[in-house]
Length: 464
Ligand SMILES: NC(=O)c1ccc[n+]([C@@H]2O[C@H](COP(=O)([O-])OP(=O)(O)OC[C@H]3O[C@@H](n4cnc5c(N)ncnc54)[C@H](O)[C@@H]3O)[C@@H](O)[C@H]2O)c1
Image (tube, rainbow, N blue to C red; front, side, top):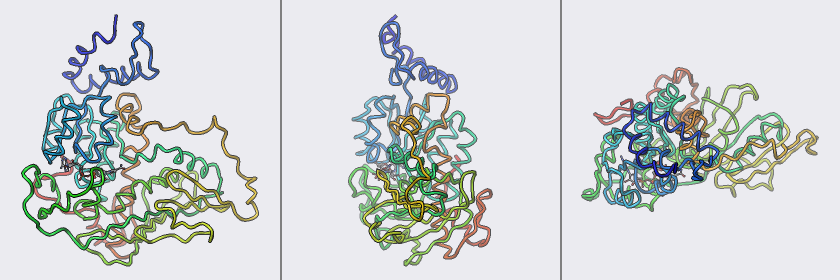
C-alpha cells in the first residue's frame, strides 16, 4: 500500500479528533518517523509526512515570525492572528489556507489546534503562554516570556502541572550553537577549578525620555486597542511601529508597559549562556545599582544587578552579576579587553577564567596550576550531542514522549526571566533585597513586593 495515498483522509480524520486522541496519534507518527523509517512502499514516513503534522496557530504573523516560517511549513498553520491587517497579509501569503484572527483570545479557540507559536510584543507573552497551556496547547513563545515576576511565576506554575504532556520552548535560539554545551562541559569538568563568580553583560543602549506623545490616529489597518491588550492605556504614536521587520521590538521593549528593556531583549540570550552552565533556580538576594534614577515610563539603560544563588549538588553558593548599557566588569587581565565583546560572560573559578560570547570561549588558567594538568578535555564521543534545529526541537517534542526535554522549556526560561525581572525590582526598590523564591516574596522590604507585578487594563486576565 502506498502510504502517501491515504494521507489526505488521515489528515482530515485527525483534525476532528478529540485533543487527547490526536496527541496519541501524533506521538505514534513521531515514533514511526524518528528513524525516518522506510515503509514497504519505499515512501519516507518522517516528521513532516502530512499525517504527522501539528495544527499550529501563529500569533503575531510578521516581524520575528518570518524566522519561523520555514519550520512552520513542515506543519499545518491552520490559524493566523495579527492586530495589523497589513502584517497579517504577509502571513496569509505564506500560509493561504489558515483562518485569520485579530484577537488572540479568539484564535486560541480555533478547533483542532495542537500548538501555538507566538511572536507578539512582550506584554502579551505571559498571557498567551498561560492561556495556551490552560487549553492544553503546546507553546513556543518568543523571548522574554514574561515581563514581571508574577507573570513568570504564573506561567511556570501552569506549565509544571502539565509538563508531562505539553512541549514548550522560549525563543533563545542561540542556545543551539555548539558553544553552549562546550562551555557547560568545560566548567563542569573543572577547566577553571571550582566555580566562584560569574559576570555577564550586554552593551545595547536605546535611551528614551518617556512614552511617546499622542501623534495622530492609528491607521485603519491597525487595531491599536488590541495591540495595547492588557497594558494600561497609552496614546497612539507611529514611532512604536517604525522599525524594520524583526527589529521593531526595539521601538517598544524599553517601556515598562510593553517590555523590560535589555533584561528581556539581549539579556534573554546572554543570560542563557550563563543559565545553561550554572543550574540555578531562583536567587536568594538581589542588589541593583545604576547611574540613572527610576523613570516610571522607561526601564533603565545602564544597570548592574548582583544576584546570589544557593549552592546546588555540584557547586557552592554563587554570585552572578549582570551588567548592561555601559556598565562592565573589570577584566582580570589588561590584555583581555572585555569591551570588545558586545554580549558576553566571564566565569571565574579557583584555577582560572573562561571568557565567552555566543560562539567562542577563551580559557585562561592561572596560578601554580596554569599548566592545566588538573583538567582533561572530553573525548569526542563524550561530548553532548548537538541540539540541532532549535525550533524543530520543539515541534519534535510536541510529537514525542518527552515533551519537557526541550532546551528552553517554560521551567528553565521562567526561572531565568523571573531572576532578570528581580533585577529590575531591586533597581526600583533602591536597596538590597532578600527573596524567598518558594513564596515569591521579598522578605526584607514589604513595599518592594508591589514591583513584582504591574497594573493591567480591566477585562484582561493572566490566568484566563
Ligand atoms: N529570538 C530572537 O532572536 C528575537 C529577535 C527579534 C524579536 N524577538 C521577539 O519577537 C517578538 C516580536 O518582535 P518584533 O520585532 O517582530 O515586533 P513587532 O512589533 O514587529 O510585532 C510582531 C508582530 O506581532 C503583531 N502583533 C502585535 N500585537 C499583537 C497582538 N496583540 N496579537 C497578535 N499580533 C500582534 C505585529 O503586528 C507584528 O506583525 C518580541 O517578543 C521580541 O522580543 C526575538
